[in-house]
Image (tube, rainbow, N blue to C red; front, side, top):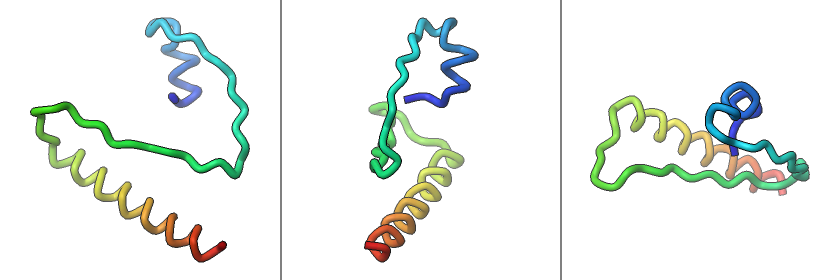
Amino acid sequence: MLPGSVARFAGGDLGLKVLQVQLPRAAAVSAAIVTLKGRTLGPTAEIFIACIREIAKAAAIKAAAGK
């Protein structure tokens, strides 16, 4: 999945074809953090990942409380 702007502006250069997919609003979004084997993360990437994990935890707690 890519942001629509990337697909529109750079899709042709990258050899991508846009496929329109309709997703239900209630669908959960899966995400993964992928790193290259044998490579270390920079300090900025480590801080970003820590922030994203905090946001995901807070969102999970909020979703569980709402059910």
